[in-house]
Image (cartoon, rainbow, N blue to C red; front, side, top):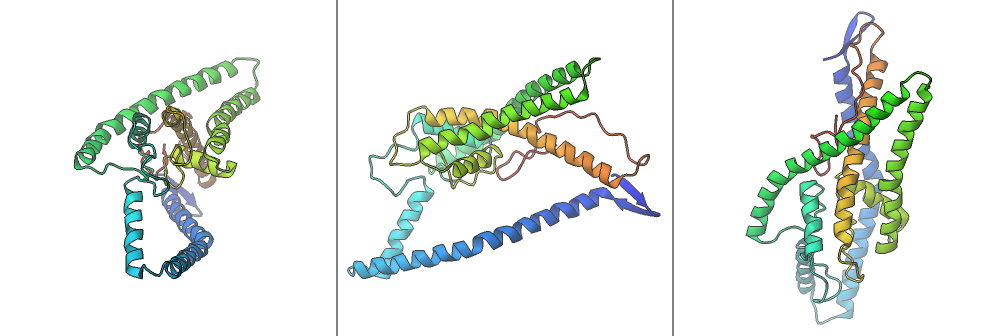
Amino acid sequence: MSHLVVRGRRINWTLVLVVGYLFYLLLGAMVFQLLEKQAEAQSRDQFQLEKLKFLKNYTCLDKQALEQFVQVILEAWEKGVNPEGNSTNPSNWDFSNSFFFAGTVVTTIGYGNLAPSTVAGQVFCVFYALFGVPLNLAFLNQLGKGLNAHLITLERWVHKPGRARVVQTLALALFLTAGTLLFLVFPPMIFSYVEGWSYGEGFYFTFITLSTIGFGDYVVGTDPNKHYISMYRSLAAIWIVFGLAWLALVFNLGADLMEKFLQLKWHKPGTAEEWVQFEPRVSSEGMGAGAQPTS
């Protein structure tokens, strides 16, 4: 563990980091509660009001019958059946959709809007993930090494005599900008056009997906009123895989910079250990749903 001596007292900066992490979680909880709790209450009241109106318009139904019908709708939704439309809706388990689902399993995104309903499918999903998640991490690590190799080559090039350090900074900025445009800026435009979302909703879906958080409130190719090309979700799955590798690298860059900042912040010159040589990498840990890559 790393320590800092201030006025004769020994401070464990790792403990400070843990406290700061917990404080960040508590801060997030308070902000989300402040922003969302009232809206949830309004939605709940509106839903109850709509049920009362429905019972008044259809007097042949009683409250219990309506609640049973609502339960049927919820069970259908949980099994991936969209209550909108009719039986002619495209299958959730055609090859393109199944390919997309397989991608969400091995990448641990886990949207939650679709899952196997048969015992055989559930058992297969367990073993498929058991071998697929490590395979996916190995694949992402190889992509990360490829990206890292380009960064190292670029770093060596700019360190040659006559090339200022500002060139290195500009080159890294160009690398990050290109990836941001390719994986975070342009895709929401496509999703907004195809899905009918706003750009903000498309960007929200993009980041939540590539960070493997995967809430499942927005998922591409699920609107029964739209006709998608057969390869739409398969292409989206390929974009997700490469986007995961890039964003994991960015997260690790940020994690390394934060660690070095904390060392700079909490260690006096001469008391801190030497900084390790910066080397961005794709982590093989922390890629679970709802978790972010760590260094």
